[in-house]
Structures are given as C-alpha cells and as structure tokens.
Image 1: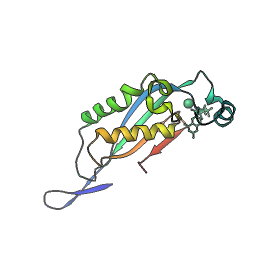
Image 2: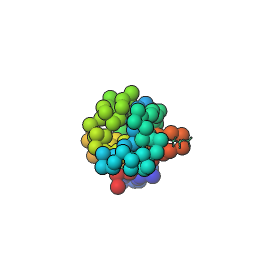
Image 3: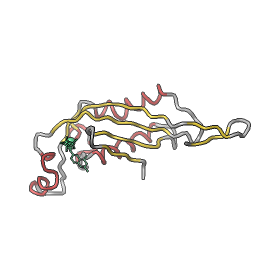
Image 4: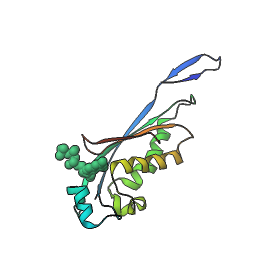
Length: 144
Ligand SMILES: Nc1nc2c(c(=O)[nH]1)N=C([C@H](O)[C@H](O)COP(=O)(O)OP(=O)(O)OP(=O)(O)O)CN2
Ligand SMILES: [Zn+2]
C-alpha cells in the first residue's frame, strides 16, 4: 500500500482504487508482417478471416503515492473516453486505427489502454491495467 503524509507529517495508509469496466469487441489475430500461412500457423483458430468476439473485462488500478484520492466519477469519465467510446461494440482491427498495424492481442490491448489512460488521468496515478479476454486469459500491464 502507498503511504502519504498528512498535514501533521504523520503517515496515513491509503488503498489503491480499482474500477472495473466490461466491453464487447471482435477481432482477428493477424500480423501484417507475416504471410497468410505463417499467420495461420502462429494464431490458429484466432486467425479466422471473419474474426471472433469477446466480452472483455478491464480493470484499472489507481495508485495513491501522491496521497490524492481521485473522484470515481472522474475516473468513470476517463474510462468512457478511453475504453467505451473507442472499443465497445467495435471491431478492434477495423475501427481502432492503432490496431491496423498492431496485432490485437490482449497484451497489446492492455498497452493501448494504458497509453491512452495516462493521457487523461492526473500524472503518476495509473498503477495497473488488467484485461480479462476470457475467464481464463488475463493480462496485467503496469507500464513497464
Ligand atoms: N498471448 C496471447 N495468446 C492468445 C491471445 C492473446 O491475446 N494473447 N488471444 C487468443 C484469442 O484471441 C482467443 O480468442 C482466446 O480464446 P480461447 O483460447 O478459446 O480462450 P480460452 O482459453 O478462455 O478458451 P478455452 O477453450 O475455454 O480454454 C489466443 N491466444
Ligand atoms: Zn480473441
């Protein structure tokens, strides 16, 4: 847990905040840098030309190193802008310019969300982006 000093210099303990957001999208795992044959070999069923869908669950964890508590209503607005508007009910590969050249794996989706969240959140607040692609496939990204 992060600690911050209060007005009298005493350390107070502050938890991390997580906000969860579900969104639905379809995609196809396909690299423009590989041949059709190589793509099929690497990505298997996920290279199906007509794509497939997921009910993703994203969670954003906010750190309190600064001692600043972010209003969850503000966080919700940021999530609308970064996750819901561009990704929900979209074809990731065709509707999101970033994925025209980047394969829409969950790892890359987590990086995309991180990079765009840090643009709209107060500095140094974002701690972790976690994406559940399925119940079993989960990716965590902490900006490394
Ligand atoms: N490293 C990665 N590998 C895979 C990714 C990914 O994002 N990163 N994604 C996929 C597919 O998109 C695919 O949709 C995953 O589906 P599936 O394997 O069917 O999912 P489950 O493991 O949850 O399904 P079960 O069949 O129930 O085990 C593939 N690889
Ligand atoms: Zn998939």
